Length: 234
Length: 108
Image (tube, rainbow over all chains, first blue to last red; front, side):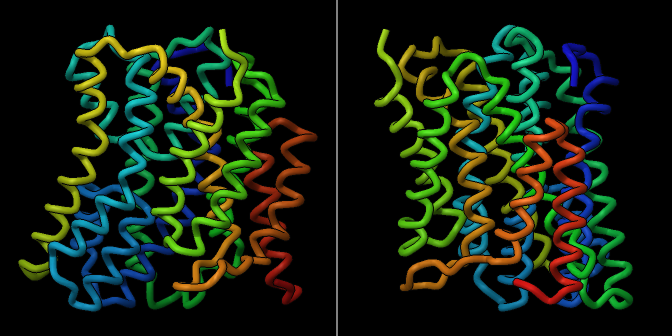
């Protein structure tokens, strides 16, 4: 990753994260297929909802015949972390048009958010819409494709996890987190490490009472508060 | 595709899209106070840690979470690869290969 902020550079920078989309996307397509969802339904869901873990929940709730209101509420809760990520990222695009802002927000994912935060450390804390459009659009296309292919191949592959591809998304976050910690010069590494340890412990305790996705949101909010409290005051 | 599925997809898509876009519209037209910028500056590290840790734990309603040993084992070589190479791609590939090996050997 370099300081280049062109559309092409966005396409290039997002490539390492695509393994994650492919692994999870294939798995999602296969699960959808075994849940008797049509290829069209899978494609529409990937294009309209476009959210990994939420789509798994939606499929399982559809299969169980849950009320639409319950499915929509679950989706909102799982994806509510997007609000934090969008708020965090939006600061860098205040000078750009509303249309560009809407375009960036519409296709933002955990992965492209984390990638943007890494990129900021290479570019003197600047981002450009075209760079993020490049990264977002390629990720969006690959996600839709992977889920459709997974659905089509559903009956051929019985165990999509056999090849370890499901770990790609975890590996990606390990890489992005580590790079974030060593490249973000705006915060001492000790402070970042403290936040990491705090969030890790908080996650364990929160998951005593909350499912992972809710715990994740609460732990992030608490982690940000903790970081503020322990950072040197100026 | 039934109406039930279609309406679910449309509404789930709408709430997700609003979560993604409304903050952009608000922040664009607002002077963000310093404390909020400071607070949000911790979002990347906090959220990435939370996503990572979530994948190492298994939620059991009403009990302490269990440990996903496969993911924990595969994370170790992935972290080492990150420290050694500082390359995202190397971390992902190492992790996937480690996971394939762990499953092949029946660990975890």
